[in-house]
Every structure is written in C-alpha cells, then in structure tokens.
Image (cartoon, rainbow over all chains, first blue to last red; front, side):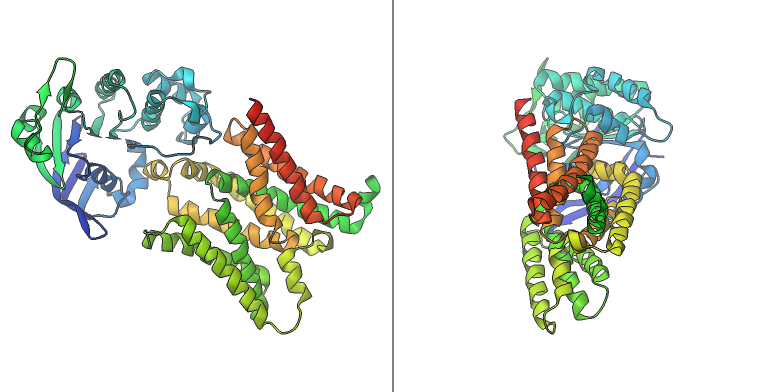
Length: 241
Length: 267
C-alpha cells in the first residue's frame, strides 16, 4: 500500500487554479522530487498534503487524511521552505527541541538527533543567532526528532551555499538508508534530483510526469516545464537548468 | 514604612494589584512574542465597550466585557482571513476605533452621570473592595493553571504556526484558549486598574524581560518579577509621593524596561 496516495487533487486560491487534477502514489522508501518552475504549485502541493491549504479531491497519507493530521503527525517530519519566526525570540536549541519531545523521550533523544545532523555543539545556542546552514540542519533535526517515517522537505537547501547543498543531500540519503525514510522534496536543483531522487514529479499546475529521474529529466519534459530555451547540462560537480 | 501595610485599603490594593500584575505579565509574554501589543491594546478597548453595554442592558459588566472582548477578538481573525486584501494591523485599527466609538456612544445613551461606570473604565486600585481583590486572585490562579497546561503548544504556535500544525498541535483550538485568557484577564483587570494600565502591564514587563532573557523560561520568570515589582514599588511610591497610583505603576514598569534595555545594549 502506498504511503501517500493522491487522486484528482485540485487547489484554487481567489478563483485562480493552482493545482489541477493531480494524481500520484508514493511508496515506502522512495525519495521523490517535485520539480517545476516558480509559481507552478510545488509548495502548494506539499501544503495540501499537510492540510495547510484547502483542497478538493482525495489525499491519503498513512491511510488517513490531512484533515486528521494530528492523528498521524508523529509519523511526519516537515522542513518548510522559509521558516518565518521572530529571530529575537529568547529560545535556545535545547528549549526548542524540548517543546517537541513526545512522551517517553528524554534529553538523550535531543542529543542523538542533533548528532545525526552533526549539530550537538549548537544545543545551548539561541535560535536567532544561527547561520543559514546551521539553522537548516537544526530544522531538519527537529523534523527527525520524533523518528518520522515520512519526511517532507520544501526547498530545504535554499539558504545554503553550493557545498552545503551537496552535504545536506548526502545527509538525507544517509538518513533514508539508516531509517528507511520515505522522502518527498521540492527542489530547483536538477543535479540534486538526478543524483538523489528515486522518482520525479514534474508539476506545472498539472502533473506533467511521474517517473524515474532518467526517464523524467529529458530535454522534452524540461522544455515543457521550463520553456523551449532551457537545457539541462549534467556536469561532474554541478547541474542546472 | 511597614505601617503602610496595616492600612486596609493598601492591603486590598496590594493583593489585587499583585494578582493582576502577575496574570498580565504571564499573558504579556505571548502578546510580546507574537508582536501583538496593538492587539492587546484593542482588547482593552473591546472590554471598555463590553462594560458600557453591560451598564446599558443592566448586566454584570465584567461578564459583558469578557463576552464582547472574546467575540471581537475572534471576529478580527475571522474577518482578516476573509478580507485578505487588508493587513491584520489595519483590521485591528478599525475594530479598535469602532469599539472605542461605540463604547462612548453607548455611555451617551445611559441616563445621568455614572460614577460606578467611570470606576470601571479608569480603575482605582486604591478603592478596590475585598471582593475585587478575591476576583483578581482567582483570575491569577486560573491563568497560572491554564498556562501550566497550555504553555508548550502555545509557545510552539508562537514560534511557527505551520510547524506546530504539522506536528499535530491544534492551532485554532489553542488560539481560542489564548484569546479567552486575554479577554478574561483584561476585563477583570480593567475593573481593578483601569483601561490605561491594563495594556501597559500587558506589554512593558514582558518587553523588559525579553531584553535580558536567554530562554523562554527566563522570560516568563523575569516578566512576572518585573510585573509584580512594578505594582509593589508603584503602589508604595504613590503613597509616599502622593501621586496617582496607576501612573506611578506604569512609570516604574517603564523604568525596568529602560534599565534592562541598557543591559541588553551593553552585552
């Protein structure tokens, strides 16, 4: 049985259709990348899956629905595109993680999770003073704290430099292998998608493809997604549209 | 100095003032961290309208103040979600002015000069009764209990609503609890310390605490300390300097804010 099953999903905002007739399944252990141009509805798709935006159609996650998210929340980790918060808030990393501990979890769980992202040394730092890369690792660790089965990442490396991006995705791949996580991520970086994803969803308001990276990332599909004058160059260390 | 504490009116004022200062300082931490000082001020004016309506329809003014505050506070959120072209600040401004205008309009409909109404509106901590003081203690105790039960989800929502919702926190449910606490404390506090003092004690002690806190727990503790000390020092000071008690309390709280701001700048 798929972990995520979407049938005929539609999302509109102020009578503007953002997503139209989207259907797909995602199975356990897959790393699925959602690609598409800016404003194509990628983030909206993730938000609909999480019940953060109204939708019509049928969404099943762990055989439940986004409207009953609180029942399955412990199985899901989420890293938003831009986590907006008051940077002057007086809160240490330890305090932030303590707020999210489940019953039976201790401070040891916090340290173990911080070790996963190599951030134990940040535990007593204030949240507001972290660098972009440090904060990204902390938010990933927070998403992993309750040992989720499904991880949803919305452009998780947007605040990180090129070297940091590769490090971040190596970490994601490592975690998937360790914990058999299912991962759904939005990415603009075609090279990352090519290297790390096991399947690709091409979204431009409608679903234009759902296939493996080698099948999906063709010149034809990329032209349909991003326009005629875009080409994909696969370099040894870098790749982009 | 201790003969001051033997005076009955001072005992009542201290019990009522410290209790309201305590409750407002706790709620104030969330008001400050959510950057909702303007909203806190607006709720005080909703309570003002509620009190005036209570007098007009001969109902208990505290009950009508709580009801109207809660209704309008929830109404702001509802309208903002539906009229998305306007910012939250603008909607609050409209409700704020509307409530103040309607309150004054309602007072105009009352017959004769109502001394008891003006006591409600502007408060007089020196003239509170033991019943008022008892109410204040009860509210402080209730707020403390609710805070102990709900602080974790409330703080998670304060940090980031989306992340809290995805983690299973029922955001709307806790938002209503917060609004209910804010409306209740504001309405009861207005009767005791007046409409000017309530927003001040809601914001200043928490803002002063934020200046010197490294963690949320520290902020709560410092906010309570600054809130309670402002009331104590302000009351005692007003007795010796023969000044208005409400104004002296606010000025003491502001003094705490400037001292802590100086400490923060020097760090």
